Length: 317
Image (cartoon, rainbow, N blue to C red; front, side):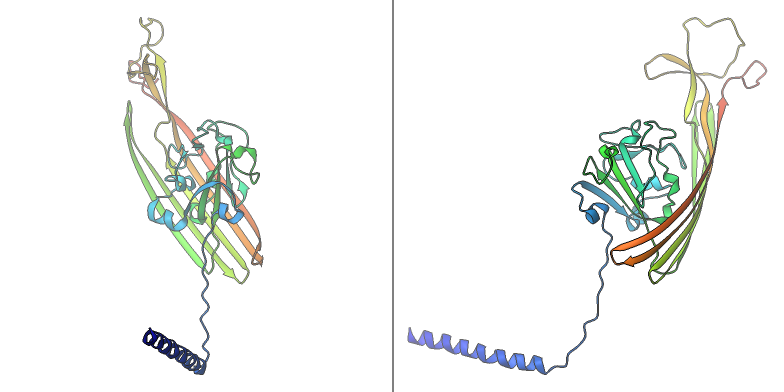
């Protein structure tokens, strides 16, 4: 037993003897400066304001890798539990639906772009109450977050469906980009057989000088849509002998299984959209920023119809 104690004491003594020696060697070395490392990362809206809600988000890097974003609403395409009813490229009647609110209840969700509301607080329909997606140029997006509601008083009662927060990006150095996107659709149904092209041209430029940063963008979109509706009539059991005899209608059944005649196509839209935006920011302090943003969105939408009916001479009716 005494031998064991002696060995343990010898090991401890040796260890204590080495520690001062190691310290003296370190102290003898000259002091070196460590290179400063700055780690940055984009936080979601829920993380910034510590909101107790379920969220999902997508960054510009993820959008570039996995989503073909022609219009801003395309960025929501693969996010869970949300759907944007987009009928064609450039559609201005694109309401958003969630698990609790359908496309006919667009006012139950809030959509913001840099804190500015671009959705309607009233008007549950799919026309003029639809969100103004076109006021945000796709090239300016930094990230998009969806907060699934309802949640805290951070937002108004319309957040019962969801809240979409679109954050636009500001340059850290001089940047200039340009894009050209082209789409082509072939459509053939009933008496409509045509091609519907679409193209978009966009440019963005910005820079930063110390605390001040600016960004300007320009987008131009041209698109044509497939028929958005059809004109129909219930087929009577006994055709009438009155009126002008016509041909060209297509026999079909409606959703209630009633026999109908498809008379023509409607909602053939041709849209020309232009978006010009400018944003400037000034960093007052690391926690406070002032910014000014201005945007002009112009939409020229013309809708036509196409009749399938012809009289005896072959003239459209």
